[in-house]
Amino acid sequence: MTGFASAPGRVNLIGEHIDYNGGMVLPAALSVGVSIELEPREDDGVFVTADQYDAPVERQLSKDAKGHWSDPSVGALREANTLGLLTGGANLTVRSNIPQGAGISSSAALTVAILKAARDASGVSALTDQDIAIAARRVENEYLGVPCGIMDQFAVAIATPGKAMALDTASLEYELLDLPANHTFVVIHSGVSRKLTDGRYKERKVECDEAKIYFKTDNLCALEPEEIAASSLHEAARKRALHCATEHRRVLATVDALKAGDVETIGAMMNESHVSMRDVFEMSVAPIDALVASATEAGALGARLTGGGFGGCIVALVEKTGKEEWLARLLEAHRDAWFVCEA
Image (cartoon, rainbow, N blue to C red; front, side, top):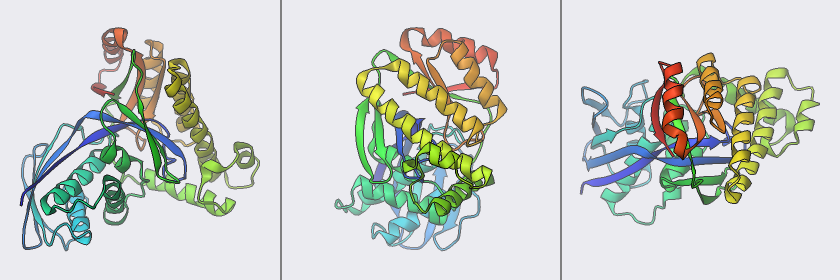
């Protein structure tokens, strides 16, 4: 039986690099996404056709990841076999309008959509969307070797466009929240691409793990910022922990502001978040910083890097009535940047 499924991309409004450190995050689903058609096979062959790539590719389930664009597909099918959804490979047709390397979770959306399509093909209804999200994270961590948290997978497996997800990554409890009525979150690609397999992402994860060992905790976000600042932990790990603790508190404030319709506070928290990502977690790059500065100068209430860092997208909070003028002014000043979508 052929299976069909789709999953949206996501933008993280605030809460970067704290989903694997016990914090609260606030992603939102986007209108762009991935759709999958999956035809099970009896052998271990994997045949993937994707509209974003010129030629189809043939792989085998038994082979390890090799840094190829088809790796998430192979990993997802291996996980589908582990879950009992499939008993072999599959022919996959992938259609996507999510830009690659933009920081809006193309890999997570693809993995989740394939697992949902395998569930559809198998008729196994007992596997929940939350189960799918957790399985998709295993694909990222164990097959692709990306030390990511659970945020992306939860957001694309459960959230729908027009909603933000306040997700407690320590407990996996979540709440879906309406986005502001008169403002929009605009996603702009900086023109600088990046991949989560970039060693700098893993380096930040290692530094956070060092801080966890020092403080004897799995939850850096539960620590008091003053305790971290006064510690004798080496500078890099201390700064990463400090970002986690303060970013968690910014997310909590943003969630409260979103519920209250307080867009000024949301914007202020976004601005503070970017400063922390730039100066404390040290995950930004000059073109991103310039784009964020221009976004606020042009009238955005707040703007920040979103995603794993070192390139990709920014997200900006802009009044709907002035969005087009704001966007034209921003793109005129940054010719390499381009509009992705809005939430």
